[in-house]
Image (cartoon, rainbow, N blue to C red; front, side, top):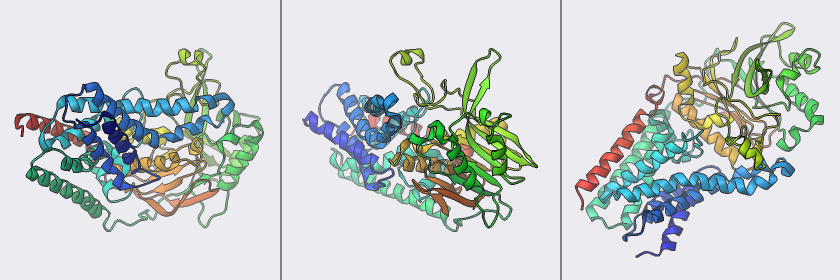
Length: 522
């Protein structure tokens, strides 16, 4: 009988190792942590199922603790109001997400798969619970196992076929197979399983190579609009000081007007760029309305992340986290499109527990008088003079299929994706680098380029293969603009056509593997 603490240590180390495969570390051997987790769940005694749950939970605690430690940073922006919540936020985040892995460990042990089939069962169970993590309540699919591969690299291209959830199933199956070496299996079964895993890994790289072979790193069409992304490097701790509004506006306006060899057609400001409600800034009599007009040249479009207010018929104010499209026409501006964020961040933009949370002293992090209101389900936006786009505001870039769902609602496929985000909340932590990698997977899945705008980095223009266009990025803490033509879209990908259909087939394959393992016991 293995020591219970030794098994728990294996599980914890396995979760930590798997997290090291993600940015900013990028240590792909860390994926072998999944083999360690599988080994920790495979014991030769009759421990109760709650023991398997605890081991799975410990694995998740290591994984999510290392993956989401950046969560403490937003609470330190306003230490007086929110600082006390920082340690509780990390414990709640890592411990809460780890419950999905604990449940996966329990279900895996309850199923008791036998033989080499257990690798496919393990992959199916954990991938299914990762899908649940992305859908239960509001969902939080941060750092899915399949997104450990560097976006734009060879293995990541499989997301165009099966999406991030399908790639997670593949990653789990390949990474867990070495655990069979330490299990009581026949030598032939071990060799066959390892050989198949090797072939699968080679196929993963081979498909990526075939997809990227000959694909130019900058494939913009000759008539592609030129886009300018403005990154003013505004620290979140300074942003909401009333005396800084004019300085922040002038920083964004000055960068937008910076001379260029070819004038941009579209200027992009990040999520919540200005520390004010946009309705107040452009209201008659405001000094900022004329200044905003002077920011643009005639015919230019400004895509601005903005806080927006709306008064209901009952006289109540509602606030939205929005993308507003302004177009300069002659001596004035015209609003040519508005998108209100649909998926809001729990506790960051609204309180799921409402008044009960308020009574406990818990407050959302928004600087509005009230929490944000969720907008309508996603649809492509087509501002005048701009190719149709799908906005993804911050958190929305985490969700596979978000753009696909919007395209299906309007039967219109956008030409590009615009991801505006306020990653200044996360400072110089791993959060912005992970967010960049995750968002880039949406480009691969959809075959669409992404323009990403943040106030403090990383801003970038990303092609339809998930690769950052050379010279088109601004790193953490950089002040400036990046100008680039919009990369071309690819034809609709298999994922765009079928969604999570291939992933459902993979889960069915795992179920069949479990049946086979029970029918043909060694």
